[in-house]
Length: 202
Image 1 (tube, one colour):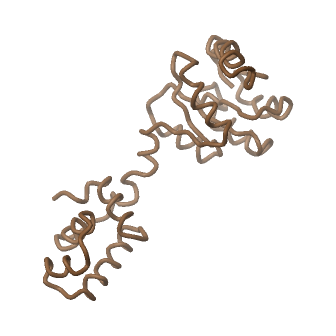
Image 2: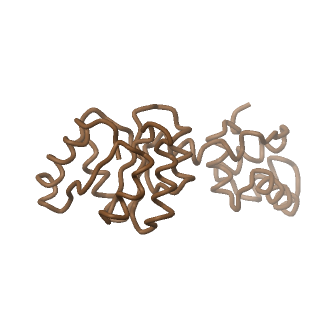
Image 3: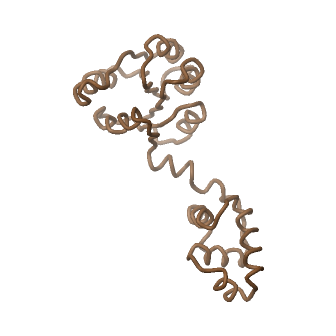
């Protein structure tokens, strides 16, 4: 569903040729309110939804398609760099997001991957989803930061105990407390979340 006829026409021409007939456009509309009905009539494998269609808008269209035709794979698109609409679309039920480029052929590899069952997201959006949100509000004291840096460096419990001048048992207790504080389940996750959130620097 897209309100730019030239973009849709580009996909109509490119898909059958570049996929050996495997993929083709079976319907299109610029009316977000009519999108779910069209999908239920055409029964496509995949629906592309432009998030910037006129009201009620692309996010509402995604939600309506998910309710009425749950087996269809829904991919949201946007020409904007703002991640907020993309995140809304994912919460509404979209299974992927692609930036809307001026060249439809750039979309073909990710679209084929989605048809094969993969979820596709741009790296920037993936970072927004997995990045510092969980740990951004966590305040660590100096000792916790030293422990976290040691964990991220792969140091053993014995080595950490010697560095912090505490027993192995105390290191294990401190580590368990730190994992709870960061809301992660193991040392690797702690290091990843802390690195993304900038908690490994003073």
